[in-house]
Figure 1 (cartoon, one colour):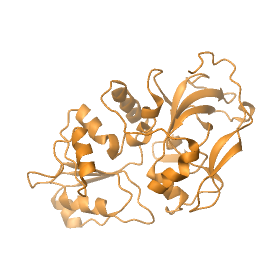
Figure 2 (tube, rainbow, N blue to C red):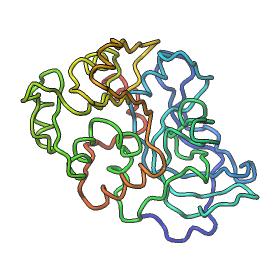
Figure 3 (tube, one colour):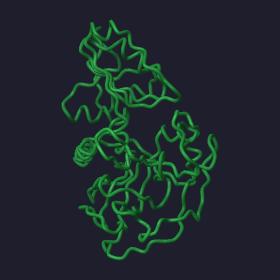
Figure 4 (cartoon, helix red, strand yellow):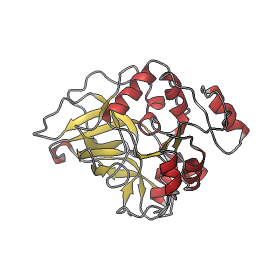
Length: 299
């Protein structure tokens, strides 16, 4: 059980962490990775002691250097986690205080609506460790009674397929799930609230949210959307994946194409609120940090 006395948390000098030291190689599990101390935190920074960290297919892309922008090694991976603030940099003006339970996301900090400064597990160390440095203006408050293991994936999956069906149903939408036929996936989608696994009226869906790590589903979606339909691109395929859109089709059907790597602050707050009401339950398994490399292989 977590202590309710957060006035003087003890910060260790070292911690356990999964560190990427070479691309396309397993993470190195270290027991002596350095912890940034409170006196070293810059204004606006906070140190979060993590309860849980999630793993995403993007972590595999980063490990394998699949994306055009390469990261600097060594790097602690991971970009979704829940924990408690144990230290805050001096001269920080924020509503966040030591002892607050918060969530850490892919986007660590922004300066304006279109400029990403840092991203956890990509441009700076992430959540595959016991203590992570984040920013007070972008951590998300977590209700005390909310289960950390099931809430952690929401920081990425609130905008991805595994919980998108549940959120859509909770918002009063009718869901059509489309994908390559696999009985287990079909049954899962139907059990989560999708009405059908494939289109029934021949007109195509009004919206397609594509969370795949392959370019093909994105290009296929353009062809099956109905008129005035919307394609939402969420997954991040490897390499310089291209979206090939017939211009005539785009204009004739009045199609809309949107891209989003993750939701904004309000999106995450609303996602947590819906989950706290019991309307969304993430499919998850709890593993040890030492199991990380075996989990990555499964992707």
